[in-house]
Structure formats: C-alpha cells, structure tokens
Length: 204
Image 1 (cartoon, rainbow, N blue to C red):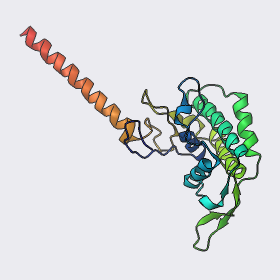
Image 2 (tube, one colour):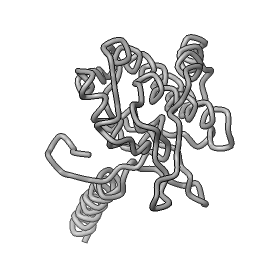
Image 3 (cartoon, helix red, strand yellow):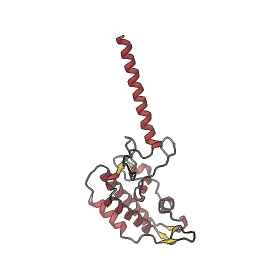
Image 4 (tube, rainbow, N blue to C red):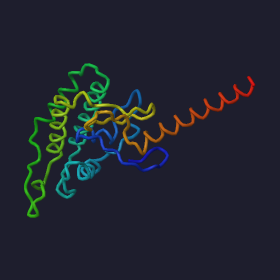
C-alpha cells in the first residue's frame, strides 16, 4: 500500500474478501470512489493475480459485465464490513449481493507437480468473484465476525479482521497509523509537559 504522502507500507486485512476493499469503493460520504483502481477488466484480472487467490495472470479472463459485478460485490462488502465493525444490522441488499456472487462455481483447485496448490487454467471473473463472496460468507457468519474492525486512526478507513490471539489489533499497520498515533501522543505529552513546567515557573 501507499499512503497519500507516498509512504509505502504493508497492510494485511486478514481475509480475501476484505482485500478487495483496498481497490476502491462507492461514492457518497467518504467518497471511496476516489481510490478506484479497478477501472478496466484488465485491472481486475491483474488484481486477482496479485491477491490471496494466487491466480496466474494469463489464466484469468474478465469481461466488462464481470467488472461491474466486482464493483457491486465490493460495495456490498463495504456495507457488511462497516456494519460488523460498528455492531450494526446488516442490510439485506448487501447480503443478497454476496449470495448472488457466491452462487457461481468457484475456481477449480489442483495440485502442481512441486506440491504447491494451483488452479485449473482459464479462470473466469465470475469464478474468482465467487471465491471472494464465499470467503465473505465464511467471515461474516464465522467466529471472527465480531473481530472485523476499522483502523483506529481518524483519517484511515481501511478495514481488517483481527485474527491475532489477544484480539487487540487497532491499526491497519503499525508502521503506518500505529506509528502516527505514537508520534501524535508523544507531541501531546511534550505540550502538556511544557505547559506544566511553565506553570510551575510562574508559581515559583
């Protein structure tokens, strides 16, 4: 990931379905559409190859209709993730969109000669979206549904699932928002300390 100031950092949302949210989102409040990176079918095919699915770029086929379906699924996942993160009720339209995508056949796995997992070639966009939607079903109906969270930074909207054992993750990434929080807290302490020293000098 790259921050607005150009800083590069690693962000792991913890789930395939939440990984899709890093590609943009709906317009309106917050205007996530400004971060859109899936503008063409080729963009989606390229992202799928870089995602957790580990698809070979040359094996992914995406149509214009599947790109539109990806946008609809992503918008629905944003709604579900925010509802989960804030303890709100899920909207039926978001659930329906995930179920619609999950109804398609997923990619077919296979074992490669070196023992690694691979996929049968020529994966359709609808198959990849089905895998993402099925991952969402597992996440939002499973034991980690209550651990879907938004980053604790007030100016960050990244969403992740906290799969750590203690369950106390607050930031999208420590090297990004975690460190910024530490710097702000340090500055605030210094301001308080300076003010206290000033008051003490005046009293003396």
